[in-house]
Length: 157
Image (cartoon, rainbow, N blue to C red; front, side, top):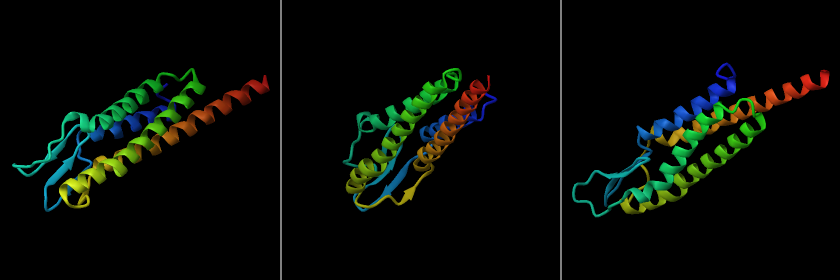
């Protein structure tokens, strides 16, 4: 199970997305407001800010990241069902693509308009989904390689 390289890649994908819980995604420092986007909240650096974001604003981000982390870890234990692993990994890659699109196309536009500036600092949390996507791609290649190896061994018998 853990001796397979794809298990290591799945674990690294989960760890890289877990970083999003600890690091901000972006900082918007503008004339109207200064905002920091986290996976679980939007924090205003201005004490008397009129922009109030509740947990429901970032709930899609939190849900997608949580699902991908949980299913990445669960997929490690599906080592006997390689075709199931391939399907789950591809679904997780689709979820991460949706997460990247959501962050860069939806949240950045809204927060840039509310703060009055473009994101000034792209933080570590913005690169975590990209790293996770690469790790999932490598894990998928490893599972496909294992499946081909098993099929070739079955042909030799």
